[in-house]
Length: 124
Image (cartoon, rainbow, N blue to C red; front, side, top):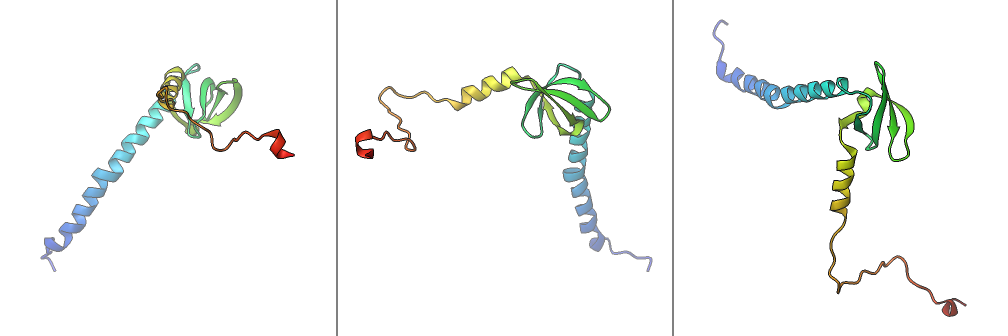
């Protein structure tokens, strides 16, 4: 009974070590960074919520944050856990606008298939 066969226990130990270093540890590190980011917020910071709304921090409480939603500056009360990241809205919008448009050759004509012109004479 005193003799334990380590070849049987070794795979189990390797699986536990794998899960710790490749799953649990990185997740704990990410949660710590997010917690630090949320605790370092101050009024005036530009944020993105987990719902994708861009906003400016207006006031901060223990559990909740009052934000001004962009672009019309309506105020909303959200929990701190609903904040995804702190960003600079001007840079994010500029990058999005630059990515959305393509340059077209002068010869290309784009026709929107959903909207067709209807002659009034054919209609009657």
